Image (cartoon, rainbow, N blue to C red; front, side, top):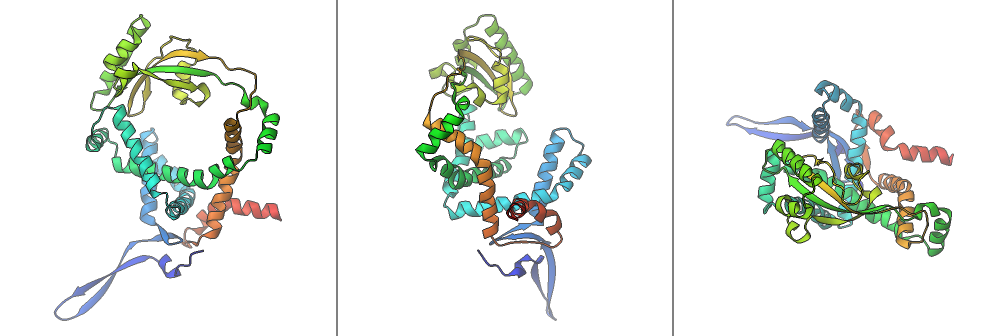
Length: 351
């Protein structure tokens, strides 16, 4: 438990000293409002407004009228503030656990992956391309940081403990009771032609993708077209071949695109928002089997996925209980019922 002087919770002010030849006068100016104190961190009104604007903008981008989007976000304000408090707790936990380097590496790798996919040589060039498509690199970096922080903390403090904390006896018992979960899944081996939007007219890229699909369906050599047209960095070596995947684990866009294709079949162009277009070929398909088999890693993973939601809630509840959280009186009525909902449910259950 960290104790903080409750004075930090008042409206933040700065004192400006205005010196003159005749007198010294102190002026007080309100620069921001502290909505919540979370251990040694604060959630400010300006931060909340930025988050709300970001959500409103995303709704508008999806086609909602701005007035309707603003009303919807305002109605969810308590939920948003509660989310920011939980986010602050995870950030603090990540620092305490020394995960910052791991998180930074995760974010940097995501940028490197995009650079490789789009054959971009420097981070400066990537930023320029993103900005030309009205994507703010720093905003993307911040979104990814939030995601990476949550994933790193939850994986370390919850998921890994569930995964490795199950005994051999419990694994066998779970397998016997859930054999239908451990049948051989349908698998598919894929090749691709990737066309990047980076620095190009998107309409022209879409048209090129249609022409390539028409050529492929007319019998053209997939590997030859991949080498000549794909924007993947290593296409000359792999001829467009990607990997073998479990169908149920594929991105839904790709799963739908290949659903009815047999080996040798080619998809219509699959657009990846703001990135480019994929044309996929099914190289090989392996049908699912009803015969169950014991795979320790698969059983551990299934157990972890089953238990993780409840354990994650317990973990977040513990973080909140062990933290110093003070919510501004003005916002407490819309935040506390959401933030402490799990704790209150647990209290009712205990009674």
